[in-house]
Image (cartoon, rainbow, N blue to C red; front, side):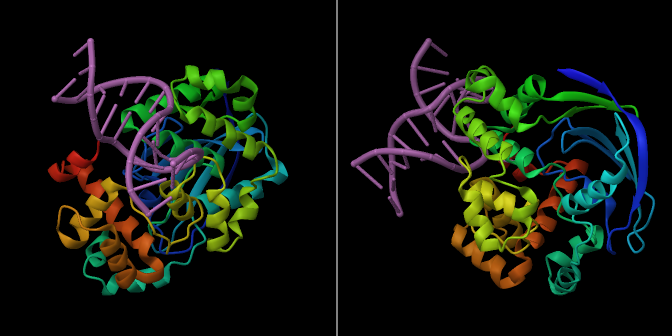
Length: 322
DNA sequence: CATCAGGGCCCTG
DNA sequence: CAGGGCCCTGAT
């Protein structure tokens, strides 16, 4: 694995739409842990592929919920110059900083379940720190595996295709470009113990080296079309497409499928039952929250996982297979 | 030692 | 539309 020491080159300020919750946006305790980012209260770091460039990003919370400001430091081999504005826009998209979710805020005030959660997390955004391609890799290693094994697979991939960047006292793994996967071939993937996913990972890399899947174009598509397009990716089925639409593309109202462990979690939260029929749950979400339903579910979900960090929740521990 | 399911998806019948 | 097979691991 190649190591790079990145020097600070530039800095700028981001001004999210208020209200904005820094910690709730940059730390998602329910998310899969990966070595390419780090978080402390009010501080956040990650490695980032920007075109062919490898960057280190440091963000600090220098505002308030009502008057949010984020100080961003950019580390790299050389200054971005003109490219800086593009980076700024990319960060705004990944962390949904320009989103107006006042409609959701109003809804949450009126909802029994959401109101207490909203008091803790008002201004939290949907966030994914990776590109679409990178997220797809994560979604693929998550399939049909326990969390421990998924971590193992991604680590193997970081070690073989990725790099390591050091900046601002942090040492983080960094993603690769899809071309590296193709260059080293499927046999290498097999060696990395990703199992039957090797073919998927290869074909996904192929889809992203060309102009076949351009994230910026996809972002503008209507949700229906976007969903159909994403399902064309080899290895993307009902579970992954749901994650992609909501997390990467911020489609707050999409939820047509829940994996068994998520269904159980939402069954507890909404009905205080161990598990209900999926259709019943989806209908309830639609009725209560309509076009904000997945965002609402996300608030409940993250709040639960934050609670879990403070004190273990027995029924939840059983559902999270490590 | 064997068997099995795990934060799915593809492909076949 | 249901169900077997797929890679590999750790749990039993």
